[in-house]
Structure formats: structure tokens, C-alpha cells
Image 1 (cartoon, rainbow, N blue to C red):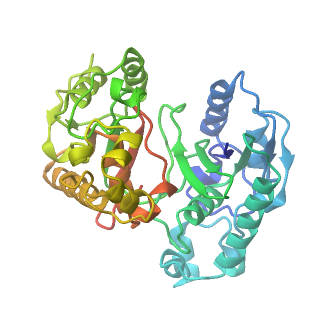
Image 2: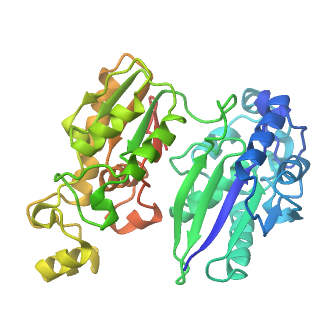
Length: 397
């Protein structure tokens, strides 16, 4: 069994509203932040948050209080930004030229004369492993902390020493990291803020937002078959999953979908009651599994043990079932398709209904990782959403 650490960012503060660097300076929660915390409390109502830890700063302790009685730990504080505290990014650029650019470039700088990034990363990584090592298999822990801390931990899990291609977590959002018995970590959920109606303040690039949704559970999913280009109907539970996801669907200007039956059905449920017609697009289809189509993991291994050994034991990214696609090929295909859709769309909010393997290949590629590193991301759950911002620069999760 695995251990799970859930990270929750504090509610919005007045400094967030004014887009000021807080660091270890404290600021009161804004009226919106108080509402976010109340919604957070409703989301976790009835759950047993038995092990609750919080940064000892006021904004995190006040947020954590809605979950229970937190244990304060200063190691989970935000990074110390020294003389930047209370300044906007524009003021930082004016008063300390070059420092912000060095941070963005991923250099090991001392922010405003405060903490060096390497010291900050060591602090939070040590805190992470101290917590993980104190947990037994099956244990769960919750840490209420800061955007920079969550970003730093997620970056470390993905293997980035500097800047990871992700925006900072939204206020009161959830990020789940699982740790298996061999201490391998996986980012299973990142930046889940579905309890909020909107996200009023957010750092990161602006651009077109693409939300990729996996189809609901299918009959093939129940028996763990590689479905690929073959098809399988949604189960009753799968239809319920999509109906629940529809309640959290962000505003969309257009919704594209893989043309397979399970994704078309998902798209139809998602758009019930809204003025949006799903547009089929072949580029969003599932990864092709060749001769392994509609087989289970075990059946694939029995049918072609040599290929199975190369792909899933030696991590060689070969076409599945000999005539299908490799992981990299599937990722490049869907990335290319989405990039073309972004470029050709007049809208700024695009949706795309696709498949588990294809979405993981796409997201792994956006992160600059390959097949051997794919398991740092969990396979997207049925009806889950993965969002990417397309700006003038590199796409970010």
C-alpha cells in the first residue's frame, strides 16, 4: 500500500489580491479567502483528517483550523523573500533589477537577500521525507502550506531542480502525492480547486486555456483492458462520473472530442443543457495498441512476452502490440493536434475529451519528460480534467 500526503494552499490573502510578494510576512485572509476556506471546510466535512500539519504562519494556521487542530511546523513556511516582502513584481524589478529575471531563469538566487532557492528546496524536501518516513503503509497526512512550497515539492517529484512547467497552486487547492513502499513518488492530483466557483487571483502566464477531460468509466476499464482504438460503452457509474464532472466544467468556447464512442458519449453528457456542440477530432483518439487492443495486461504479456519485457520491464518505448503507437508518438500526436486547435481557435477556452494513455503521454511531454519517467504522473482518473495554459512561451500545466 502507498502513503498519501495531501497539500492544501492557504486561502487568498489581501497581499494575493494586490499581487504582492508575501514570503514569511503575514497578511490577513481577504473576504474571498474566507469564503474559500468555508468552501474548503464543506468539501472535507465528515472526513477524518487525523494527521494535520500546517506552516506556522497566520494565513495557513487560519486556513487549517477549518480542517481540525493543526500541528504547526515552521519548515513548511513559504520561502523567505527578504527585501521583496510587501512589494509587487513591478516594484521588485524597479528596486532590485535582475533579481526577478534570475529567479525566472531558475538560478540559485537569494530572493531579496532572503533564502537561497537551494536552501528553501532542501528545507521543504527534508520536511517531506521526515513526514513520509514517519508514516506507515496506508497512512494519510495533510499539510496546509503555501504556493511556493507546493510548487517546489511538485517540481522535486517531477525531477526538476529549477523551474517546472506548472503554474503555482490555486488558493485552497488540493495536491496529492503518493509514496510507495520503495519510496517512489507520484503526483496523483495537482491543483484541484473544484470546490471554488472561480479563481480570482493567480500567478503564472496568461493565454488560451485547454482543459482535457478523460472519458467516464467503461466496461473495458472494469476488467483492465487496453482499449486503444477499439471501443467499449460507458458503465452506469461512468455516466454518473461524467455528470458530476459536468458540474465543474469550466466555461468553454468550444469542445473537441475524440471520435470514439466512449468519448462522444462523454461529450454529449458534458454538454447537456449548454449551448455547445462537441466537434470530433481524430488527433484526440486513444493511443493505438496494435495486436494488444482489447487485451488485459496479463494477456498482452502472454501473447508477446518478448515485446512486453522490452516495454514494461526494460522501459524501451516501442510501438504497442508491434503495429500500434509508442508512448512518445501518442504524446506528440495529441500535443500537435491541440497546438493546431489552439492556433486556429478564436476562443480562449478550449475543451478536449480524450483518453487515459493519450492524456498521460500528452502531459508527460508538456513536462519535458519521457516514457521512463511517465509514472511520476498518475494515469488520469475517469472524467478527470487536466488543464494547460498556452501563452507565447512554452505551454504549462
